[in-house]
Length: 309
Length: 307
Image 1 (tube, each protein chain N blue to C red):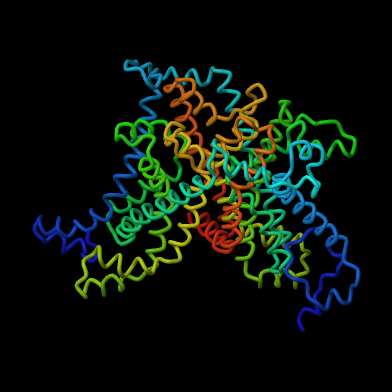
Image 2 (tube, each protein chain N blue to C red):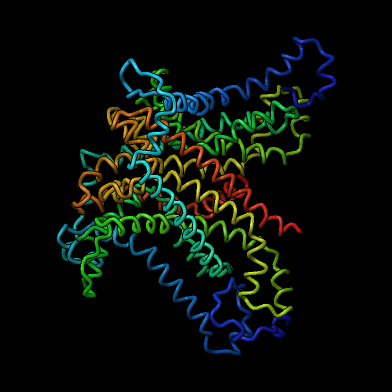
């Protein structure tokens, strides 16, 4: 076995936390005590994991406690004061109808995904297949959207939507969020479509399908992986967006997403922990659940989106 | 334009035919272009036009005042303070998020189960809305919150995490790092895993220590990922808002207000729309310049890999 001739001695880098490949089994058998470096590495990682998890733990356990128990013992699980009434109160709060907010936000996520992909896919196809400088210009136009922070355009967007009669309405919000997804979507789609051979569309054209039909029936199904990436990216950004729904929908519309609802419910009562923790727990649960179920896709999608974008 | 036609054949056709061939392309591209123009390009120019006025957002008369709003942005102490704090957050946040992210990524790059679990634990805050992260930490860092409760048990007095200027600023930055470094870590992990295993084997045969391998093999090869991480974090942190709103609401005494915080407050609550627009245009320019500058500055580091 090649690994037995490993030239590095265990003491070669005792303190360096290394980007290790899995250690060969033969070596750990020869050396019963782990090196200082290994111990240090696991201490650091363990402490780090603790720092990451304790806030989640505090949020969960304190959602079932009365105010005085939260303040006196925030880290303790107290079965004697355990109560579901605070969660119940948050669930039925008049200020923030959580269940409705889930529905509204999910609806937004779904509609923005559908609209964004329906708009972006054909234009990405035109860009990827085109050869003229117009097509390049089109790509550049959308790509410059990547560098415009949404908050910069938000103020004038309010006036454009007012002119269109869409301010404080769901279609207005969906229109803005859809536009916000276009740059990344078009960029990733057209990069992907360049790798799809032209034979496929040409074969479809020979069968007599029109260009548009050929795209939707023959090319679009091939785009599944990149569509999945985009759905992950868009879903996270729409679900978590706060500023645009807060300003475009506005409190006067009575339409709350999960984030604007949390702001309305928690913003003014941030010292009443029996409201804060249950509300946050309810707001976070779907996102955590989605993450646990889709972890591999989410991480893969984020990496693909960032490194190709 | 029809993709299947070469330019030469297209030129020979009569104009009507050419337009008929172009029609599918226009139908396919048109809607997206219209939506993008209406929601991005027109508003961007509108922001610039508004920034030259003294409009308050609702009255019917306003006047063009040239670049006065821009001059005001550099004089107004509120804006200058917000700009400095935003710069500090963006700089410290970028350094810390990438430093911690790279460090943890290097530690858990192996494919063991424990490493996969740790990856999940370090990453999960990234998918939670920044607003909720802010409220959660605000509840934990308040004078009677969990962190001070914990410190009280070991005999340390309450620390004014959110109520004293220096502590509040540090709290904002550290909360951002807590919630964001997992994303940087994920990208670094992807970069480290894409380094061919033979490189590490060759380095091991040459007698390189783990640290030397990291320094001389991993680091240069993940230079492109490093650039992406730096640019994304920097550009993202320059427009930080949600987490500040929830954590400190800009306080104490306005010390943790950021530029976007100012832009939104001036544009809507303070009815100084022109001034708000001027600050947002400045933010746009700074973001674009810094983003491009980092990208170009990193070209050198990336080129070394290519050689």
